Length: 607
Image 1 (cartoon, rainbow, N blue to C red):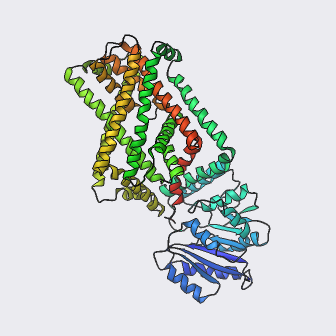
Image 2: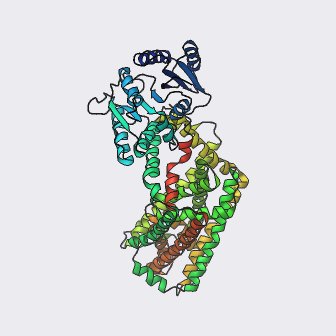
Image 3: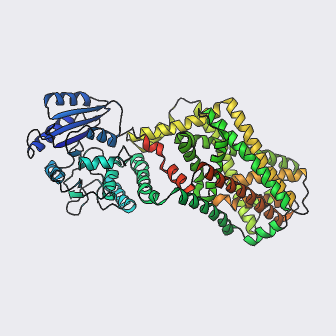
């Protein structure tokens, strides 16, 4: 049975210049207040690329109080600490940064806080009023801001969560580690927050601290990494426990209904009722059936996209996933529903988040290209026949109606989106043929931290999946053909709605205008300016129909309202049914997708 009471872990990554001195200072400080044989020093060497492993081996061979715990792969700062703690022998577990930024005269106070049995967790603090640290201005702003967010969102009572000077009771720490998910820079913050939530006795005391090494703010590590972890922990500790499957499904359904009610903020409900009252209900129902036919095709197209990047799934499941994500776009702002699909395929079929987002990006690119192509071809035809003159006049003239103004805005938005889609495809194809690592070079402009390598890797995987489909001729043809059929059915839905209104005759000109109006309307609502694109779609559709047909603005607006309402209703019904079938709630899906668990789980790029 071991006599070791205190185990001090030194997390080490490429510390060949300082490790020997750090171990020597640590041993002498511990020996000044602990009996011989009662302590050990563990060098937690985390897949180093310099001489740190050799130095650690030598130190361990020369002094029986020193142990070397090696990892072949990068575990991350938190991962390396946990790996070493589980191999430690002491009942009091301690760690501090190897740069010895914290004055070692505080080590006895740190250790005795736990060893005495008075506290379960102890941490040094640089921000207590008694002894605030003198930090470089940029780093001070970042650190204070981070700690304010932790206290605000995670209800922590501590002033400093990241001082690398902490001690734990062994049993308390191992109990807490069962719930700790981060393996990187957020690890110690999460331990402190969970310790307070679990009712453990936590002590924070002031320490003298001198900044050493690189003190600049790192955009990728500090903002992208730490910020996402605060949100993830907040959800897990404060929100998720209150949400059962029943309440989350009910909440998601309620939000869908709220989305439908939001339409009344952009449209006059009386106008909607009047226009629908004048339409033939049977033909409106037919338009809904036509639109519903496009959804299995969306599932089949998504199956082909995933198959091209190495994931084979059933089209029925994927149709449900598409339904749920599109319903999410009607409910949540900023097209958050797009991220929902990445969550659904990750949670139900274990498809990694980067691949889920990449497959969705491929789908979006094909959608935009298809409707841009449809709009472009029809516009060229209209221009050739001179029919586009009235549209140009409507766009450039002085608007005297709200519909015309919104239509002008929507058409301009559509033009920008269409050009962006063409540019995106050109960039994807060009990058696929290039040997340059653009993702890593770009990320490195914002971050010098090793964590940026992981972020760059995620981006590279995402871009690689997109490029795979874009450069595969057969996949490109299948997905492109399916996209053309899907958007043709979208236009046929609008034509059925047209025909449902009295005094409307389907002519070749009206068919061409419908293709153009629906295409431009869908391009316009790509930007998340209103829920579900309500208002933008109607504005663009109405302006084009009123300018290019003899039916007038009132009927054009009525058709656009009913057409969009039918499509949204089919989407909502399919989304609610799919949520029940797959046992998915929109609220949970949005939370999980925003966490980007793939980023969190692969924090192997560390320190």
